[in-house]
Image 1 (tube, rainbow, N blue to C red):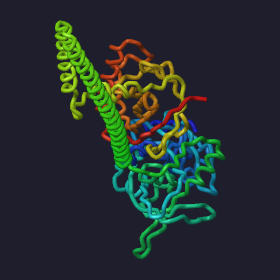
Image 2: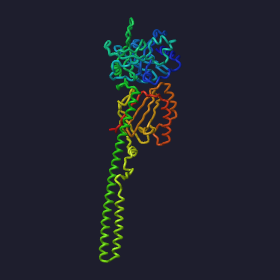
Image 3: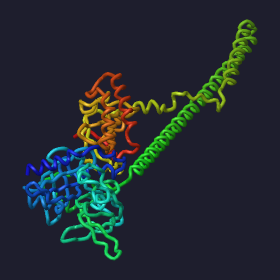
Image 4: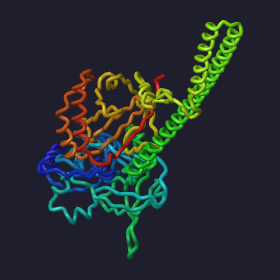
Length: 505
């Protein structure tokens, strides 16, 4: 067996170069998880058998394929070596058989080293006529393009073919999906995907086109695959949300934001109109009070002036001219005052509305409190797009200044706090955003090729701040460096998970 592994390692040592970077679409992202499964049989020093099929990773070091692809390894484990050739990179890996179900034509392999991006099984309803894509390594393509045996163990992107899902069929007691995506020998064990890149089945065999009949493909349904994996005690990622394109999801989100903005503006306009009406009514009431007060004052002064003139007449009648003149002068002054008070009354339309009587919406917005402390965030499915990630609740602990969970510093971008994660052991870039004023947490993920990840990691090298920091200048530098990373990412992400957060129990 050692000689077999040495032979396989020697063949892999001849592999040079790396696969071209995957395109930033869902199918290419899922292709990172697809592998070629190679089986080599020897008799003594002589290689007596060589075969291959396809497979896909369900965890970092576990691969699903068809049982018939690795049947020789199951029957003759001492004389058969199994290898896994990833879709990108420059290295292949040995593997061992850990679970085998010939009745359902499924097998589970474990890598002896290395790691792969895992794919997700779509466990929701799938409509007849839906679009599907097959990924794998068809033998007829290899026969047309391979120059030597080394080409079979050189990492390269899988072949994709598109078709439609017809319906479910029972084949030897196994639930299978009948579809029209072109597959051939070598596709066995490879995934059948929906247009969001989620696995809906495992391609296993085709009908034969005779006398011009069109061939059809059969894929083992995910319900069978999930049962097999549970029996093997193998955890896997399962997704049930419907397939929506990222463009449609982002357009819907923009439409929602525009509607929310319009509603907010309408509420603000109604509040402003109400405040202006209240201010107008108050000004009218104050104006009317002032008019009535001036009129009343004028009447009082007029009455007093008449009394003064009456006193002057009385004094004159008594031939007391000096007091009479004084009463006349006082009456005249009172009459002038009454006339001025009457004429100085404000007009009914002479209103003075104070600026502070209206609602200052900017001050009202500034007064919105920001949620801090521990919270639990739940996925908002109708605003999210999920292809491979878990949808479990997320626990957060937010502190002012952008400190998340007491250990990760976020950078401010307007009213949003942002952190971009570029893990060393994953082929995924995650943009994490938290909006405290709305208690909203958004995770945007880009599923990248190895080459693209290497470039993003190079840009990440300039980010030194990791733990929470009270230094505003350091946080500003973090924001600038993250903007550089973000500008290097594809135009559209593969996933967008929107969470609404609430107080933790």
